[in-house]
Length: 335
Image 1: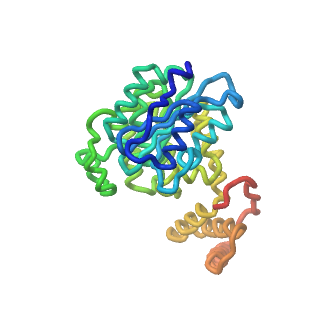
Image 2: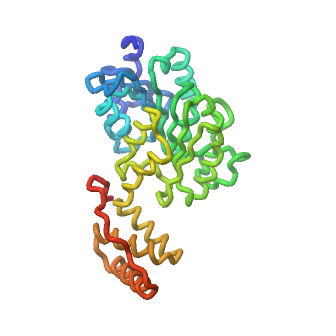
Image 3: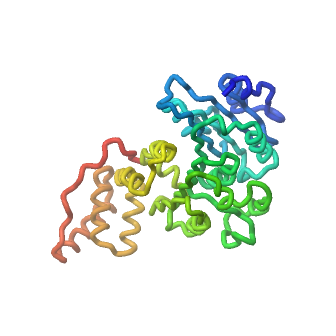
């Protein structure tokens, strides 16, 4: 791609620029472009780092995130894209929202229109759209701008239009937004994608209903039990989010491949605590003993010890015992 065609050195934040705006504008001027999209949205593009390019395929990683007050750098607002650029040599386009806007703004529509008109996405061999929750909705919705892209949507909403999602009582303010105009209904916007991966926790009922609305034949449903509403963040804690994205980009992500990686969650303490609570609630004695024993390898507490002791005694009375302890993966997250 022609470097000069992608730079936008005239772009400047509307109103008073924040420290984050200034930092992103400097990066945009140096590596690609930075643009303000109305009052509430920003976009920063950084070209591929050819010094660490891992193969002969050019890849663009497009992510959608909501900024926080203390965000001050590209590593804060787009950590995954920043990591993939530094480790894999991928280009990244990060679209930022300053509020719970669901990226529903005419300026954002116009931005993606311009990228399509300029053939921006056609300059890459692979394009990945990624986001979680509100960002997951946007990743699916705006992927229509880049036919053939791969979409990775973590706990996404399909729409918040009352006539289609009146059963979702969350996000009351966002329900006033227009989800019926351009780039609107996310499940329809992914029709031109090469593959779509929807990660969600089936125990989060409303998230599961949204996920079920993604019905296209090229959509892969990836249920993650006991991970809560932030499935992308949980994958990151388990240390597999970047590997998942790379596998999807390379066309080798499947359920067996993913769930083999996802076994690392067994060493994530907060997952084990959720598992313990779930097994106790369902009176699953064997699983309760297994979960309590696993958690005790990382932390000690009277409730854990009592749960393990009680479950073990019940198993002993039933003539059952636990299998030998398996050493957890050393590199798994311990959060």
